[in-house]
Length: 213
Image 1 (cartoon, rainbow, N blue to C red):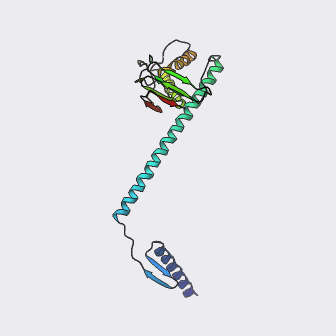
Image 2: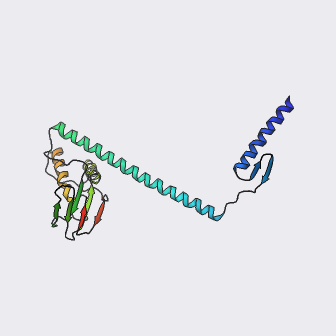
Image 3: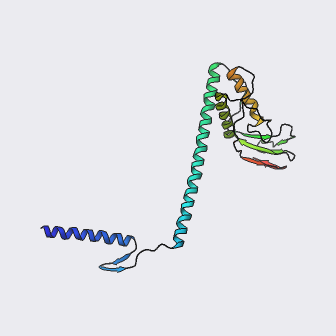
């Protein structure tokens, strides 16, 4: 009995080894005939292909990580905005106006001449900046700026405010809203201590005739 058990055990181990060798394409098996195919060889082309695949996977991971960070920043900005509005309404300092989300904000120089044409169906808006540089920002950009402003207000580190032109990190077009929120929260008429760090916008360019949808 012991001998039969040992033979079955050895036979199972041999089958397992054969299956591994066939999976590695070292041997081939046709019924009871086994053929040797050779040990696998790794060529330079295979290594380069694997390195290219690895670089592609790393690139996709970096893009997904950046996208995840962007979503986290948007969520944090939205939560901070909700908390701020709840505090304003709870304290009785209800703002007289506001901007609905989502929106697109256009930033240009303070003294720029901008021609605006709106179609009758309100579906098409044409802006002519007359070669003046401009930037487009979405609501996420503005929420980031407000969030950065709130952090620096809490830190209490005053710095000079930029003039709101091209180099300004806080767009001058919505700095007035930030000032209003500071007045409502603190009851004083002072400007923000410092602008938030630069956050890239959606689009930057010099155009004269361009249709924006």
